[in-house]
Each structure stands twice: as structure tokens, then as C-alpha cells.
Amino acid sequence: MNALHSGIIALAPLDGITDSAFRQIVDEIGKPDMLFTEFIPVAGLSKGRTILLNGLVKHVSETPIIAQFFGKEPEYFYNAFFIAAALGFNGVDVNMGCPDPSVVRKGGGAGLINDPETAKKIILALQKARKDWKKGKKISDTDVPDNIKQAVTKMSVGSIKEKMTLSIKTRTGFDSPITEKWIGELLETSPDFITVHGRIFTQRYAGRADWEEIQKAVKLAENTKTKILGNGDVHSLFEAKEKMEKYKVDGVLIARAALGNPWLFSDAIPTLEERKRTILRHAELFLHYRPELDLRPMRKHFAWYCKQEMGSAALRKQMMSVVTLQDLRNVLEFTQK
Ligand SMILES: Cc1cc2nc3c(=O)[nH]c(=O)nc-3n(C[C@H](O)[C@H](O)[C@H](O)COP(=O)(O)O)c2cc1C
Image (cartoon, protein in one colour):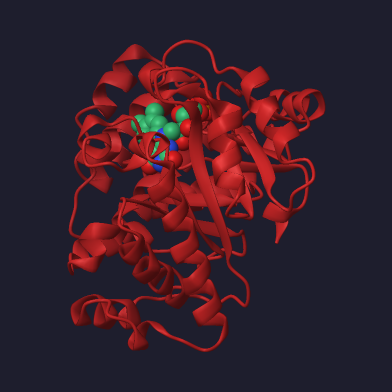
């Protein structure tokens, strides 16, 4: 798959944002090389919380899509692999970078940077799952709870993949950069790729991403089978290509710059009309994937779309009170369905 070629440009995972509807919009407009789901807790899946499967609903697409999970129990990651495989994902990514205190306190996300032994056990459990899956083991043969198994069989999957990648997304350190030590530990388990976000845990999303640190990971992985993707503060395709040239990363993940800007991946500047049509399509897709909801959760997207050129301040204000599709059509002045 593309992820293993050099020069990949992907939409990064963003919790609460890169849901099926947003991924489909980005995919239709910009066709990035790879997409990620939002992160999903493996513990919840292994305890039968079917609501979490909402995060694993795939949009119809040929673009490789990776299911991202977080947690710290290797056996739960083993199960999660079979869920992702049964749903036709192209790979499983382990979140080892989330700075949310509720995740880190329990030892997951960036907490794993302080616990490399558990981090390695997680990757080894996933390697074992992949081996067993290749030998023919299926979700039905695992101890994934029955209600999750049943829900998974009812979900639309597209085609089941023949190969699945195993990867990690992490930071350069916890309270100081320890890129060589930390990435060196991860490389021992030979993941297919590691995405390195050039910040440490204590920075959260503040300060500048340090691409010199990312480059240390590139050097370390030079004679291994593991690819290194870089992430942090990339705002355009041009900048992504610049980073690949300068720091020799195998690819770049872009997160915040894509908010309200699915055109980023195609380098296009939409007209006002295209922008409005995209907002409407995004809202329609949101309700298609989440018919039990209304458009209130979409208001953050409306605000991001409005940060770009979107007409008057009055229009922007009206969009913040949209609840139904009809409200949205009225505000955007679409007279027909
Ligand atoms: C609101 C928000 C949610 C995020 N959710 C995730 C997530 O679910 N999984 C993950 O690996 N990273 C997550 N990230 C981190 C981003 O993927 C990315 O690493 C970070 O924003 C830096 O990239 P950027 O400068 O292109 O935004 C999140 C970041 C933000 C701001």
C-alpha cells in the first residue's frame, strides 16, 4: 500500500473531528494518500461497548484507511486487531502520543513513552494477532465480546484486505526530547511505520514542532524496514513536500491545517459557491452516518469553514444556530434540495 512507499501525505487522526463524514469529504475533494480514524479505546471494545464502533464506520473509498486505537493492555490490542481486520481496515495504528490527562493517567497515549516495555508488548501482541490472522484466525475465534462480534458482522466493510500494516503515532518525548532512546525502543519491534509528532508530551500542541528531532528518528530507522512519517505544523502540500525533501521523512501527516479546509490536499482554492456546497454535503454526510443526531455537533466545522472566506459576519453568526439541514440550506441560501 501507499503507506509503505515514500512520499505519503495523509490526514492525521483528530479525535471528535476525523469521523466518517469528515474523512469522506477530505477523501472526495483532496484524495490524501492515507486516512486515520479517530482514536478508539481498546479497553472499551474489549468490554463490549458497541457505541465505540461508531468510530470504526468506514466511508466508501479506495484510499487506505488505518484504525487507530489507544490503551495499554496488549491483550485488548490483540482483540482490536481482529475487529479492524473484520471491518476491512488497511492497518492498525497505536496511539502513543495523546496528551489528554485522562488517557495518560491510565498509562495510555503519551503515558507509554514512560513505559517502553508495555509499549513493546502492545506491538508484539499486534504482530502475533497479524500472524494468527494470516493463518486464518477470525474475529469469531477470539474472545472479543459477542455483542461486538454481532455488531461488527452487521457493519458494512468494503473488501477485506490481504495485508494490514502495524504502526505507531507518538511524540519525541515526555518531559524532554528523548527521540533516539524512545524511537530506538520502538524500532526493536519492527513496526511498518512510526509517525513522529515533533513535540514532547508537556508541550501538548503549543510551541513549534521540532523537525530536527524528527530527523533523528529518520536516521535511526535508516537501515530498518520501518518508515518514519513526520507530523507537526505543516500547513500545505508545498510545506509537506519541503519537509520530505529536507528531513527525508517517508511521509507527512497533516492535522489542524485541514480543519475547514478539505481542499488542502488538492491544493485548490474553492469558490464561495463550492465552499457552500461542500458545507452542505459535509452536513448531509454527517446525518447519513449519524442519523440519530442533529447538526449541533457540526457547528465547530461550520466555524472552521467560516475562518476561510465565507461572506458576511451575519452569515457566520447564523451558521452557529443551525440545527437541521433545512436551517443550513436557508442560511446558505440554497432554495432547492
Ligand atoms: C483536537 C485534536 C484531536 C486530536 N486527536 C488525535 C487522535 O485521536 N489521535 C492522534 O494520534 N492524534 C490526535 N491529535 C494530534 C494530531 O493528529 C497531530 O499530531 C497534531 O495536531 C499535530 O499536527 P498538526 O500540527 O498538523 O495539527 C489530535 C490533535 C488535536 C488538536
